[in-house]
Image 1: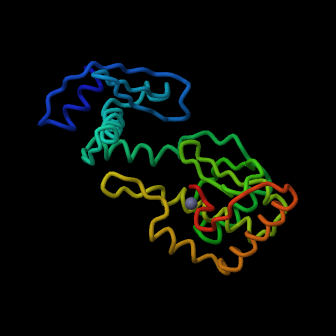
Image 2 (image 1 turned 180 degrees about the horizontal axis):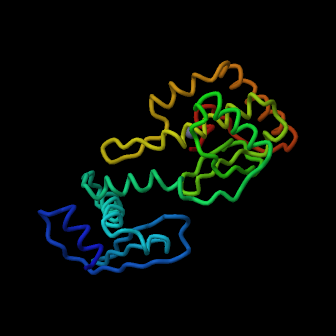
Amino acid sequence: MDLIEESYSRLFPEKSFNYQTELGYNLRLSDFNANIRLRGQVLSVNLNLQWKDIDEEIKIGLVQSLLNKIFKAKKQTRNIEMYNHFIKNIPSFTPKVKNDPVLEESFIRVNWRFFNNSLEQPNLQWGLAAFHKLASYNFHEDAVTVSSIFKDCKEDILDYLMYHELLHKELQFKHKNGRSAFHTREFREREKQFPGFESIDREIKSVIMKHRSKNNKFFKLNLFSRFNS
Ligand SMILES: [Zn+2]
């Protein structure tokens, strides 16, 4: 079976398939990533090697998601549902290799306070001393990364950043018309449950200012896009 042709025919049963296909596995892509390219009539899909032993029906869902993108379609299929379900569960089988005592304490506090201790500990790490991207959650790697400018900040500030990222871990992403949404209304409402979040927002701003003047680097402060993910 040609995986790409099969995926296409199930996604667009009304269309005929007039492409040559190239399917490759490699290690250049990061965890569970994949990409698609159309050059002339050649449709190529590259998958991270980790996909090799994954169930074909799930891989068809992955390829169909890529086909949706490249052909600007928004089709939903049973395979795409399976693929999304699989992707959401990746964190539970990702090995935990990165940890840091300060971040771990913050994780434990936030997990108790806001998640009834229901979350599994993700990878935890300090990132570069970045001002734009203060913290992020990568669900392929199940990793929370916090900018090093917060290394000596107050507990509350760190916990607030941790809380935001753990909400991403818990809520994952919502699918709406085939597109992913990260900061949904539900997300924003949950985020406001952090006591004193408004004053913490201001304190975060002052931490950034302090570090900025120390490093004297150009940056643009945009509170609404602080969190890249
Ligand atoms: Zn976010």
